[in-house]
Image 1 (tube, rainbow, N blue to C red):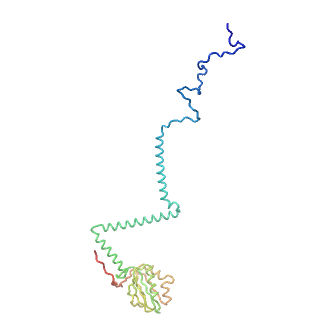
Image 2 (cartoon, rainbow, N blue to C red; image 1 turned 180 degrees about the vertical axis):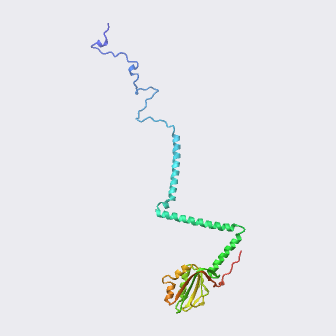
Length: 280
């Protein structure tokens, strides 16, 4: 009978035949260092494995669209900022004033448009077109005739009498009276039968005065059409016409009236060089 290997002594241990395959205990243990000719060993770089991006074209399209929208929004914002740059730094008071000016201008334009529409409606009618144009031309002609003194006129106004017993009222005082009356709203006037015009000249010495070359004598009677109360107030201002006449020992009588007649007229000047142009 042979002795078991564990009981042998004084000799080398027989390793026995080499193992033919893995043992059942080693079946589930991975062997990364082993490779077969058909399965190469992957190199361990420490980075996670890359996954293939399947949505790259869609993402690129979305990014392009967002870029376009962002550029458009930026352009609109820049344009809006440029348009409001002038008013961005304005004060509240300036903005209110600008708004008031614009509102007032709008109201005036609306009023002018309404007036022009009214005139257009009157002139647009075939029946009344010629009559309306003729009436307007007559009104303008009469107004110009009254202003330049070629037509008589009547209306509310003031009758003023300057008395000069000492013969000391000068041409300057008489001219001041004419100018003060015009400044107070006089539309037309006459003095001692002489119609006052734009180019009227007062000449002469105290007690021997002339208007446009026509002699006038005291008392000097003014007939003026306009606001009687306003013109009377203008004559009584400090250092005005009334005070200047009193310094010359004269007096001034002021009488506002509802009806003042100015019947003196100025002759029309004959043109020396001008003549009407031939109509086409």
